[in-house]
Structure formats: C-alpha cells, structure tokens
Amino acid sequence: MAIAAKDAGPGLDRAELKKALVIARRQPMHCAFALGADGKPVILIDKIKKGPGLDRDLKSKAPDTKNHRFGIVEIDQDNPKLCRFTINKAGTGGMARKLIVALKGTGFNKVLIQLEDGTAVESEEGEEEETGDEVAAAGQGGAEESGDTQPAQAQATASATPAAPSGSDGQSQGVAAPSAQPTANAQPAAGPDAAGLTADLTALVKQMIAVIATDPSKKSALAELATNAQASLKRGDLQGASAGIDVLREALSGGGDSSLQPSPNGGPRTAPAPGAAAPPNGAAAATTAAASPDASAAAATIAKARTAWTATRQKVEADLGKLQDQFGTAFKGHEQEDQITKKFRDRVETVLETLDEGLANTLDSVNKAKDPGERAKLVQQAHTLLQKYQQHVATDPTIAALDANPFVPMAVGKTMGATIDALSRSIR
Image (cartoon, rainbow, N blue to C red):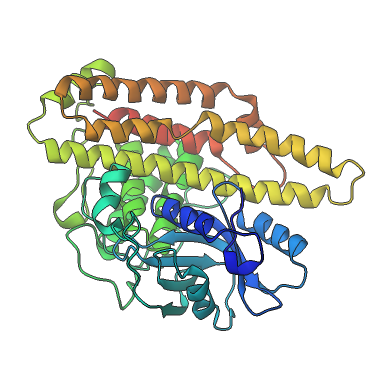
C-alpha cells in the first residue's frame, strides 16, 4: 500500500512514512514525489508497486502537483538518519530542503537526492531529532535485525561501463573494465571498497567471456549476474555488489570451499583452482558448517548469501515492474484494459510470491542460532527452500512466458537459476 507524508494533505499519517523508511533500512523501497499546490512535498512509498506506477497514482490523486520524480529510497548504512533518493531525472528545485520538512518527526533528518548513475543532485540536513525508537538506534541495531553480522560498509558511488557481453548471437563481446568513482564523503571502512570490488568484477568478467566462448548457453545467466553486481556498484550499494560478485564467482567456478568467504580488506579475491572439490550440500553441508571452527567466517558467508538472494529478487522485481509498465502501455485504451492488466499483474506477482523472502528469513535465523545442532537444522531448511525454488524456476510456465515476452528483454529463469545454484553450493 502506498504511503504518503502527512504534510501532503489531510488524513495522511506521518507515522506511515516513518514505518516505510524503517523498512527502507533493510531494503530499497519504490517511491514517487512531487510538489503540491501549497508548495509542500507529496511522497508515495511502496514495497511492491514501482516508481512509474506510483507517479501515475500521484498524478491521478493530486492533479495539481508538479515537478514529479520517481525512483527508489533507501537508508544509508553508515549514516542511519540519511534518506537516499535515487530518482529518474534531475531538476528537483530545492526538493531536498522540502523533503527535510516532510521527514520532521520521523527520526530521519538528512536527505540526499541522486540520479541513477550515482550523480548527486542535492542534499540537505535538518535538525537532529531524539526519537528514542529503533530509528535513532539504527546504527547499533540494523545489522542484528537484518542478520548481517558484518560491520556497516562505507557507501561510495561507483560508475562502470557495461560488464556483461551484449548481443544475441552467443558470441563474446568486447568488455571494458568497470571503473569506480567514490564520492567525496565516502568514509574508509574495514569492509569492501568500490575500487577493490570493481577490480574483482573486472577479473570475473574476463573469466566470464572465456566461459561463454566455451558454452554459449550460459551467456544470459552470467551476463545477468554481472549486470546485477555492476548495478549495485553504480548506486553505491557495496554490500549488494560484494554479494553479487560472490554469486557470479560461484557460478563461474562451479563451487569452491572459499567461494563466499570474505577476502582480507574486502579486496579482489581469486576463484578456486580448477578441479577444486565442491563443498557438500544438504545435511552434510549443515554438519560441516556446525563443525566449522571459524564461526565469524561462516556467519559472514551466510550474511552474504542473504544479501545476494535479496539483491536478485530486487533485480527481478525491477525488471517485472518495467514489463508491467510496457504491457500497460501496449493495452492503453483497449476496451478491456483494466481486466487485461489486472490479470497480467496477478499472474506476474505469483513469481515473487513463490520465490519469496523465506530464504532470507531462514538465513537470518541461521546466524542467530547459538546451538550448533539448531544451526545445522536451519541450514538444511535453507537447502530445502533452494530446492523448492529451483524446481519452480524449472517448471513454472509463467516464468517461461515472461522470458519470452515481446516487450522487455528478460531472463528471470536463468538469473534466478544461476543464483539459486550458486547459493546451494555456498550455504553450509
């Protein structure tokens, strides 16, 4: 359900905006905003509905609004009171300052507006607020709540040239090395840095081209994984980029004992040597994990797997949103437009309803388990979920139809399949 700031008009509850932004600490939320006739911002935020759809809702419900923008909103992990809005175009005209006013009383008092390529448009900071709730304590409690046992990573904006081969003939294409451009306010951290992750991704892209030359059938899946990691780099999501790179490495290597283990200082890592033994799966994997002497490394592996699954779902969700928009445009004006688009939307939503957040929740529980036996059972549950997901991806006619649609190029089956396969080998 879309949520709006109380300042947008009567009857709207600021508490709902606060609730949405608390969720944005854990995952990006879709958003749209504009200026009302009274000069105050109108904000819509939703977990499912995409920015363009929210923007249409906003124009329909408030036709006198102007200066419309849409995109995503997320909370900076290093600065838990900073709302980062990534929007579709510049020219917001002092909107950051107006958003600060709309956020007053939510516990979030800083706003950064940027473009999809990471270019900062404007920023503003309001007065410090003492709320006494989980928002104020986000810096301490965020990692525990999300199941991520690693310290918050420094946020940096990275720009990269396309990291995945293009074209439809199955032949490898020339690929330029991604380049990272950290923003001036990025802070040093013990975790991965944009430059190290970019070098890591560049090395994997070179391996990817060689793999595709040998087996062109892997092109779509590997290209999607590389693009996912690159997109995270571009928007400054270093945790997501690191997890995505690890999944790509796992898909390229076929599994290795150190495939998802963090490297020193988060820098480039090397893939397992050819012929390295694959780690055990299922119950055997759970037993291995329970007996592992390096609990911190095991926890980091699980946290990365969780991030990778969440990032993959978000990428697929974004692609499905683009397809829904194109589908709606294609049938605009049709006498049965509403029925057709609703039926299409309902069918599309079954994909993410089945490939749900159950895995992320289970992995959260894995890292919270104190007893080795309980942890082993939860790891096995994670593998059971992955098997269910894999079966669904392989047999669901909706996924096959989505990938064959004539409107937007998609590879839901291959993207999900590659991620699920990689996580099946790494979770232990």
